[in-house]
Amino acid sequence: MERKYRPKSVKIAFRCVLVCFLHKLCLTDKICSVPSEPVTIKENNTIDTVVAQINTTTKDVTLTLIANPEDAFDLKGSFLIVKKRLDFEAILNPEALAVQVRCNKTGFKSVTLTVLVQVENINDNPPSFAKSEYEINVNELTPVNTSVALIEAKDDDSGVLYYTLEPVVNMYFRLESTYKPNILMNKILDYDVIQQVILTLYVQDTPSPPPSDQLSFTASTTIKVNIKDIDNRPPWFQPCTRTNLGTAKICLSLGYKGRVNLTEKQEGPLQLQPGPVYARDGDKSRNEEISYKIVRGNEDSIFQIDETTGNITMLKPADIAGPISLTVLASQVSNRDQFAATSVNIEVMKKSRNPPKFERERYEAYVYSNSGPENMVLRDRTSNRPFRVRARDDDFANGINPDIKYEVQYSSYVNITTDGFVLLKKAVRTESFALQVKAVDISTGESGTAALSVHVLPPVGVQSPSEGYRAGDMALLGFVMAALLVLCLIVIGYLISRLKKENPDTLKLSEVSNFSSKLLFRSMLAA
Image 1 (cartoon, one colour):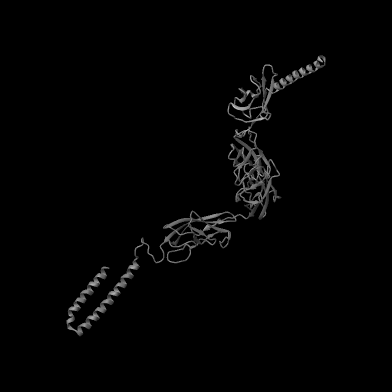
Image 2 (tube, rainbow, N blue to C red; image 1 turned 90 degrees about the vertical axis):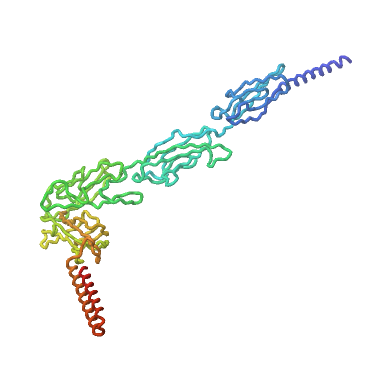
């Protein structure tokens, strides 16, 4: 019986030992533990913030920090803490910091725990541009929607940035989008209108307006855009009238006119109207060098033009009277494709021997002080006949040159008609004024002048205080008063004779009447 039950006791003992060993082994694996989920901490945290608690299943477990990324963590009892402020932008791998803690206890197998820490990025850095001011050059007439610059800001928080461009009124430029600061042409530029545009580019790291619970940072930079004048216009003859043709600008010149005498070679440059032949570059700031050439109308080689100045001179006299029409070409020296043409009309005429001459060297005329615009100046004080000047030209048999034109010089009060009548332009506030009249032969340019003094008279019916009574006026006044006196004496004498016949007592009354009549006579003489 004893042999039969001995093996069974051994088996039971072995099983007990095995169970104890497995139980001890299981306890070794569970002497410490940490949460398996990653722990999230916002950057710029408070020092000694708890990351996790190390849970131990038995006493006297020793905890050791064996992996400490960025040297940012520490153990405080059974707690894993952060011992310094974490900066998301400064950490190499901020979203996967693996902190390792080793658990040791005598008689137990050591255990290594891993705590996965994720640093959360917050908006704590403002965006910034590389420079506070940028300067770019843009050609005028650059097509709309052309990109002229891409200026981006940087943000260490690596978030989405939002851009705006100012000014927003009458914008020559615009942004491609709020998120992409690609600066595009918004409308055509003209150097003659604008030479520089100042832009301000703003950036913000949150939408506008920003959320109330979120910090928002902004930055700005100045963009100076210089407009470049390109070679897009030909020479413009001066003077000229500017006009627009769509987006193009042109300047229209009416050409030039001059005169030369028949069979005479004029020395020096010809005197032309409205001035000498001159063209300048239509592109204001480029001012390219211009050269000149006669391309038509000079088949007889009478004239030549200076290629640099444009002055026209004569090589020989003209032998036929009448007009000569020259076509002059002006072109850029550096770009012959930029050119313009104009006409120079020269009248060949017989030489004038006598300039216009007024009938008198000095004239006097009159005007009333209450006369207004368009009233005529008068030739004398006593009549309303208009004042008129005439100039003779002895080159004509009757002295009348149809090409004479009258002008007024040195006065703003009057104008003169083509027939020589002088008209007021405005009311006169002075006692007199002087001017000069000029007669110009528009066919030859010859002229003559005369002086004109205009006296201002008081209005009709009003006597000037500077004028006394004239002798004729006084004589007339005395005659009228004497006649009235005689008439009064006759009437008084008649009345006295009637009274005497009817009543002798009227003698005293007659004496009184005689006395009064004498007194009246004396007073009239005194007057």
